[in-house]
Length: 151
Length: 130
Image (tube, rainbow over all chains, first blue to last red; front, side, top):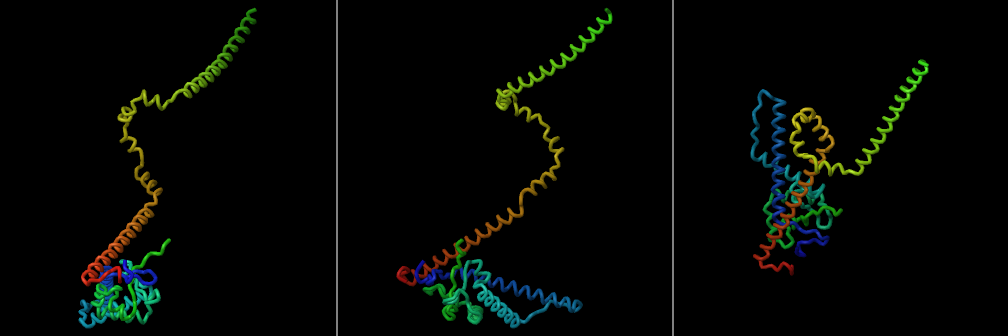
């Protein structure tokens, strides 16, 4: 462990492997949510017009916009409520503010938009001395290893 | 005279009968105490081990008949009732999941450190002086 990877409160910044795996898990979660939404749409169509039912073909733009919206809402909600998405919980990570243990709603929303629009920014973690992504640098957040409370 | 002999004879019979009962009771109590004393002195377990071929006896046992007389399903139900199986499964599953999660996190953290070390060497950074 190096001093630059540790925050003043002793929490270590997470590296690219754990954060990358967490991002993959979150992507899967978003895709599952999208699948559930599509399934719900199909069910609604069956209920309201069973005779004229055919599988809906959604436009690429519509699907992209909805996926973007779902991802942003999911990330913002998780970061502001608990600091951890499903992927972060799995990998033992937590997103914290510069001085607070939680990310504010506005910062969380902007960070989520940044992460969804420019996911490649995560790769900056590899070369940054303090293991920050581009989004972390811009929005002054950190991703640290979350340790279970000592009993 | 004859009447006196008959009375004497009847009295004798009664005496013999009563005496025989008392004697039997006395003998029985003495025998019981004697057997108790003998049994106290003997180690029956050791005696059986030495004198009895338990394996041969066990080999002659009709286990099938014993099993047929037992309601195995009811017995199994009682055993399962006594063992809190759901709690055991729950605990083992929870501990297994927790171990796997801890392992994944630890391995991920190590992988992070390995990547950081490689990048530090590639960029010529001195990790200790950072």
